[in-house]
Length: 184
Ligand code: IMP
Image 1 (cartoon, rainbow, N blue to C red):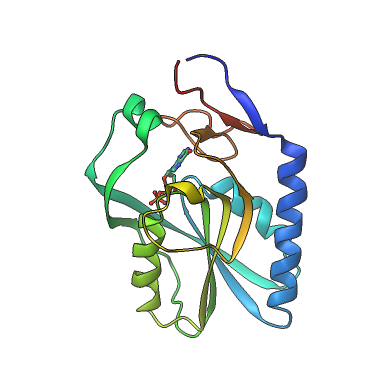
Image 2 (cartoon, rainbow, N blue to C red):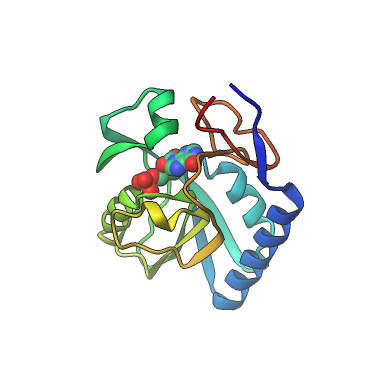
């Protein structure tokens, strides 16, 4: 693996996550929310975002795995996932969401297939409201017309790691968001 290039340094991430938290505090003033993180990539983002909230909040996690042909790490780096958009839950949330405000917390919105599927699945559980907070957004890769309600950074079509995001399960612990060079 050639060396990683920093795209978004930790200070900028912290500043933006604080702003997103402030937006959520304002939008849900006087209400409570469940932050629902999508494992594993959103774990670090959720832990920082949750500590910016001053409203009544709890958090929970959902685990998903995509059907379709899982690419090798090299293919994933080159052209991303060739997913069918069908998602299997590997871990469900622990609490009921009926009548609750839920914010689905995701590391990155790429093709949009995963979140489109999850949103439909979760809406059937009758939350009071369901919004999406995505730290990163790659709008140029979108295959489904879905948008996040809270977006940290819009980024170009690069494969990124760090701050929870992985390449073959590595690099999740990097404090900065870095680009993995495609020729490497
Ligand atoms: P989507 O269904 O294509 O929107 O898939 C989103 C998921 O793909 C994310 O939760 C990540 O797990 C993964 N993903 C997409 N782009 C990247 C990337 O640049 N780095 C690491 N994982 C990515």
